[in-house]
Length: 315
Image (cartoon, rainbow, N blue to C red):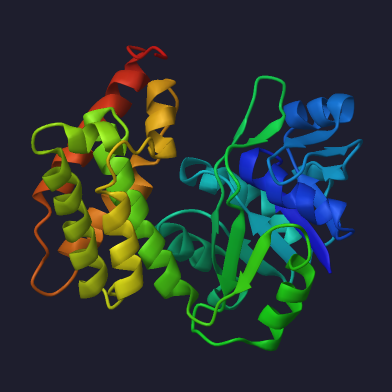
């Protein structure tokens, strides 16, 4: 199976590097700047689960793609989705499966409109990774999982074939018969974490130590749960219990990656992670009230306005 990994940044570099190291037929679709860097330094991964150093990883520029791939792993940020779609058009054939690993749901609608529902899978990954100054992929903890499945549910022959390729590559590959449910559950947690830690500019432990902080996080979580439930994907009891435990853990240093981006003066996924959740609250019968999420969204959009004006500096 020929696999195209779109980008060799943090997520793409980590999972693509693991697959390549395991002997899979992987090519990275990159821009010219990253192509030059990889040619000079190779693809390097630093991880508590084992480091990787791959000289001259297979790369291709969008303009040089000549035939379609069997599987496309799409790991861009939501604000780069339009550019990513443009770059993979020549890589998509009649039997290509596109596995996006973005957060939220809106990207599924966009990809389906462009490539057709039959080509777009559901997917998500859990991995805290970043790129350092020299382009090394740095894995920040030991979690590294990827889940994938048919959006209609069940385990198809296509998913079983993809599972055979993604398994055995030193990360947790999970073929899910209910991937959309899992994606909603992750979205509920992530949106709560992003909205709460960005609004308060602090990790969970500092927020709940402040007056009203724990109530703020739990109110956000309850709003997100209500939205998911109204859309037909109520989070399961075990997921709710685990999330509530994390949002009430004294001394917790957990933050959302969106907070790290915000503090570095970088672009953020405000619309995709928070704004679209609010939109889906309004789109259901008996619209869900989102006073805390709406406040957090206003905060994030104000940051984006300041950043666009050039009035934001890294902390």
